[in-house]
Image 1 (cartoon, one colour):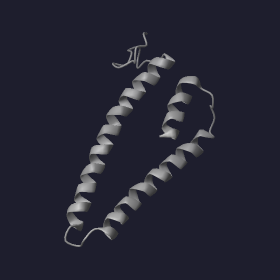
Image 2 (cartoon, helix red, strand yellow):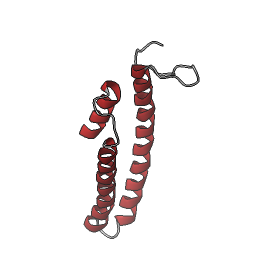
Image 3 (cartoon, helix red, strand yellow):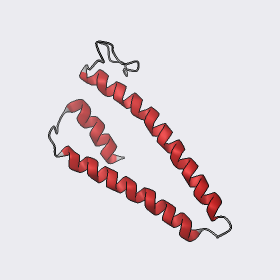
Image 4 (cartoon, rainbow, N blue to C red):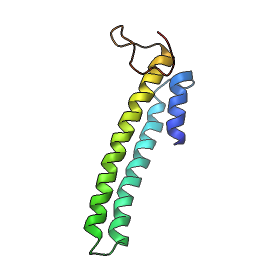
Length: 102
């Protein structure tokens, strides 16, 4: 959460603007991947054998739903960042602008 807030703040204020941001993006990806993998490992280790298949299937569905919600929220954040920086797509402003005018 802190890295996400940092990236959003940096996208608006431009306090850090070089390739060093890739290190933080890599760190966020590695941490997210580790949480994903360890979550399924814990389900496999701590559920009863008769419930393991349902638990893994439920976790997979929840993962897909989480990705869908994150994608939709990502579009909203992208529109806000476009509005904050005055960016357009072929001269057309984004649909969602967080109150910014073009």
